Length: 102
Image (cartoon, rainbow, N blue to C red; front, side, top):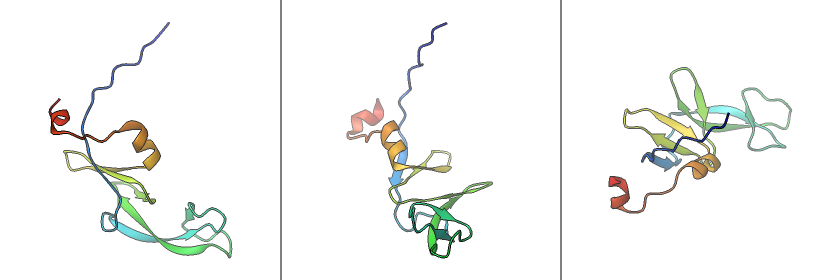
């Protein structure tokens, strides 16, 4: 059997790249000395440094925010977090008002 990908219906979203003040809170985590993009709840080595990491709170979890992440706000008031690389693969900026009405 062969399949074809269904066409994607273009939708416009409200999104903003993370800036200080957009988070729901901060949590102290421990930054891996060898991998600065990794943080842990407890230190794994004596070289791990305590850092405050911003997060978005969801119903049952928290998502930690990295530099460059995008916060997407939906019309129903819900929001989600998306990594910059993934966001740029999926979305493109709407430049003109005519495109919004299309």
